[in-house]
Amino acid sequence: MKQAIVIGATSGIGRGLAGRLAAAGWRVGVVGRREALLRELTATSPANYLYAVADVTQPAACVAALESLTERMGGMDLCVVCSGTGDLNPTLDFSLEEPAIRTNVWGWTAVVDWAYGFFERRGGGDLAVVTSVGGLRGSGAAPAYNASKAYQINYAEGLRQRAAKSASGVRVVDLRPGLVDTAMAKGDGLFWVMPVDRVVDQMLRAVGRRRRVAVVTRRWRLVAWLLRHLPESLYLKM
Image (cartoon, rainbow, N blue to C red; front, side):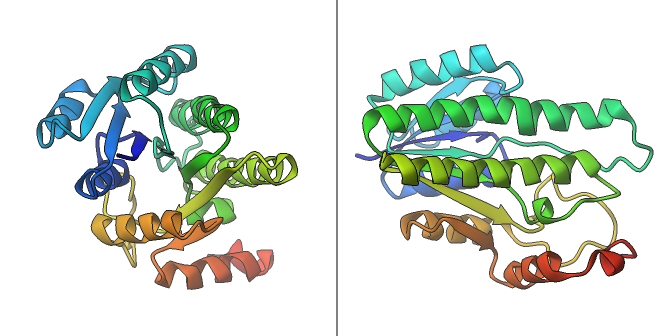
């Protein structure tokens, strides 16, 4: 039985990915802050799930919990890092920016480094990180969120370069969703908000095909292309 750990599995994309993997016969370690939701998920298929309560904004305790969970599972073939947060912040209130920085940069880096190090020592494995199409450009409405996703995109590329140079066998895939029908989709007049199930299916297909970068869903590939190529003089007016 293959083993996967999903960090940020209590809701949204993370919970959807955990469910799909369990249904496919994987043993899945689910990690998140809300124990009641982890218990609820685990109860749906006790033979397929183990859980650990951990908060990525407390890196030392989180990594210790991940080490313990991996030991209980007997290993790990795939690690998916889904944990993230972000708020609209038109007034540039730092109290709204700080959680995104602590979660999406500080804590995220700690767990990604842990997972990469585990696979590097093991001699191979798949590390999938859920970033965002939003990381391709800045955002006046949510500056820290988009900037933190840009950090994740570049960090993942750096790890791929490290893996290529060292021939470590670690595969790093950057999964970039557009707007998804979860609590993270905030604001008025949102378009092309994708259902979680469709996003999860395409993400797992990308992991299975060993893609390096996957924009999901397919229609968001067009948005991503436009964002990358749109001149700043036009983008700033949007």
